[in-house]
Image (cartoon, rainbow, N blue to C red):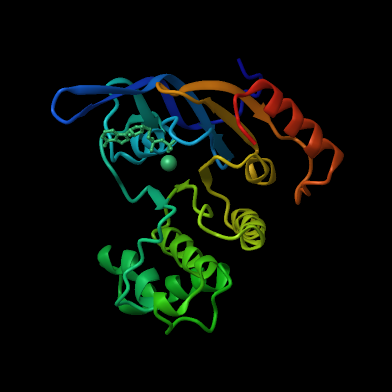
Length: 258
Ligand SMILES: Nc1ncnc2c1ncn2[C@@H]1O[C@H](COP(=O)(O)OP(=O)(O)O)[C@@H](O)[C@H]1O
Ligand SMILES: [Mg+2]
């Protein structure tokens, strides 16, 4: 039990299980007894190897999948479907190729029926926040992978969600761009605090970004492993003593192949 009394839980998952039916009859048990709490404005990282059900769990929180057992709550309300209170950023960019950066980012506010001028202002604000000023008129194919993912982040933010859900957003980037984007993610989060659930299979990424790291164990069904508090200062460097110590502790305790 956590001692901090004033911590508000933004997201609560209780004993979530998920079984998929494949090819009509085959059952795949993907998640078992997943319980998780994500605090208000916390950066929570879910760390686990490939194929342990991380995306499935995130999709349940997003409301894109229904759990077979257990429940997921947002602000105490049962999650029954997707909603504008949750912004999603996935590994594949999912940008609209025929729309410019501005067009992609202002789409959410437009769909919400906001006046044109306001949509522009909101979009501009988030384009600036993610460092894409000057690229408003570019199309996705004119951008690098890191820049495309910035557009994805700006687009999610432009809907003003309370919660950001990111599923291995930097998995396709080269190591250097990835580290840079992790630093940028931290900067953006510190500028505009949100509750973040960030899924990764990369322990260094987890240690750079997380307030806490919730580990998941491999081999289906995926289960919750230990949760680690990362309480050393930001910005963190992979060469810091504390970083290396916690990294060692997590790898020793988990089945992560690194
Ligand atoms: N819609 C689905 N139907 C059937 N099986 C699925 C579905 N979605 C995911 N799975 C299965 O769940 C397992 C875990 O997938 P996933 O949640 O994507 O894990 P991770 O994100 O950790 O790699 C995989 O073996 C996958 O085949
Ligand atoms: Mg996944």
